Amino acid sequence: MLAETICSAVSAAGLGIAAVTAYRKRFLTATRIAAYSLVPIGLVLTGVVEWVAGIAFKPSVWLGFGVLGLSWLLFMTTRAIERRSGTTRAERKAARAAERNEAVAPAASAPSLGAGATAGPAAAKPQPRAKKKQEAAAPGDDFSDIEAILKKHGI
Image (cartoon, rainbow, N blue to C red):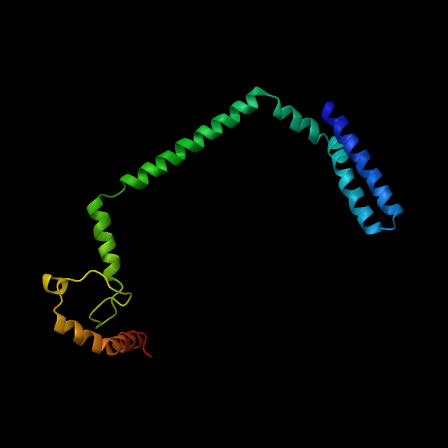
């Protein structure tokens, strides 16, 4: 009963504001205000306000929302546990290494996406002379990677 009275008062106030706005020759704005002010009284007449008030003040409805929340929490917890225990650490490490190795272009000597995992102990400690040779040959390496990619796609 209180909700219906408040909605009626809001509608009456809105129609009053619309009348004042129309008096000031702002008819488009007045029509829009009147449309908004008729919504609460329309909801009262259709019974939506009574239905919402009935739902909001019933303890069984709130208990239902609690059960739905608990269900969602359990579902998300099981997903998180499943995601964490789905693989071992060694399997995840091997998967990451495989992803890095997939970035190697055909006939390329290094991964095309940057410095990745290098194989062998000799590659871990480059000699100073070899480093200077690599710096000098860096532009050629870039072009060989590009050529390999173009050949792969038949261009």
